[in-house]
Image (cartoon, rainbow, N blue to C red; front, side, top):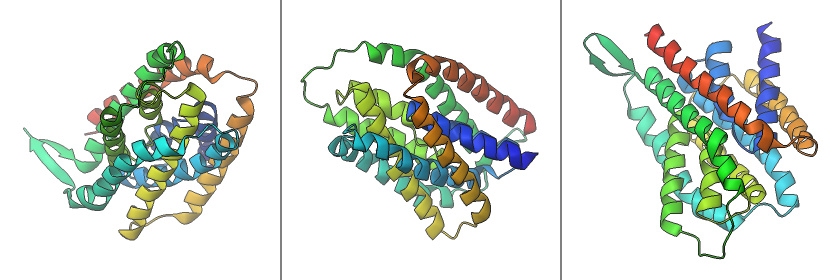
Length: 267
């Protein structure tokens, strides 16, 4: 039963990436933690691999249609990548398992990761519900790219990617439209490239730190996620991701609330 649910969930993750160009890790981490029973920190590593590899598959379609801006991906992605590297290589390994205690209430590293992830889910949900409606009506101009805000946004995305194993697509896409003046479709393709590089590098760092991985599970789950992203890419020709995005946003918001409730009750 869990095998079937896990594979179905992996396909759903891929479909989300294919339709929206983001959102894979929003689903992958809760699925692995609550459905598959995997440790939260290990789930962040798995998420980096699954979302990174799936994004590589997804970005091919956009690149072939000239919908990937490699230069802007570098401008946004390099600060983000450096932040991911610093966090996965130095910060996370240095943090103790028990961070602190308040009146007998223990705050562990796992709890902190899941609570931070729930915050990211809520930010992503608001982006899906509200920001995308606004972005569709933005008139693109020939103004110069706002370099400093773009770099700062890259650092913020890198922070979330490094801590919770999230690609941060729903933070990247609005930034590419607002700060870099990219059309929506090109922002989605460029976002997938940034997510792919950040995620794969983050996973490689964990690999070099001798983190134990269940490779059989990881390759199986990722294979089904790739099937999902192929399906998602096909669906974009028939279904408007813009119409589905607000509904998915409300789902993510409810899931974020559930994560907070579950973790606080559990501890």
